[in-house]
Image (cartoon, rainbow, N blue to C red):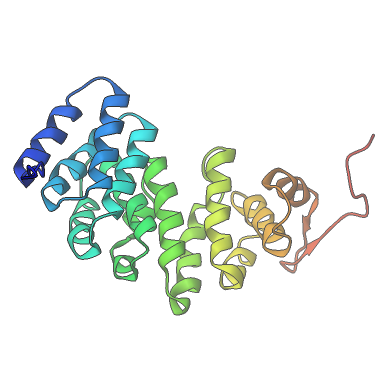
Length: 231
């Protein structure tokens, strides 16, 4: 007679908990891979808890994958609860996982507190997730909210915001155009508009073109005849 080697749910949870106490990232990665390969409801608390503290990028990515292997009805409520966590990593990881699940029911739970978070990873992930989930009728309003963050942070953070706005397409154009002459946000707004018109450009090229655009007193923009830096 074939012996049943299926572990009870409690054993699976204990196995994950034990692996997650290891300082070896490969051990944690293998345990998470196993949990995603054979998803069991009892694993969810350990997977969610590890999302809050996992230091390794690849393990965090595997945690998201493992969570997406479970039924949405089981994972989504837990992830939405994590959006209220005081731990920034818990919030950012929950937002990232929600973006991978792609369930529109999460959209109302992404708040201005997420979009304007002082934690850059939380804000960056919230921008992308909100832009991906926003219903067509809410995209212009979301663009208004996102453009309050124009000019924030370093190049990588600015690029992340531009990418989120590009996901909104032409719905983002009025909000961007409203900021083109703004002292703090204007350059970033113009660069994003350049990308909206030519998605094949790199962000650096768009920023260069935006620097060459001169806002006029009427709120429009004019581009100098020179099309590049002096040689």
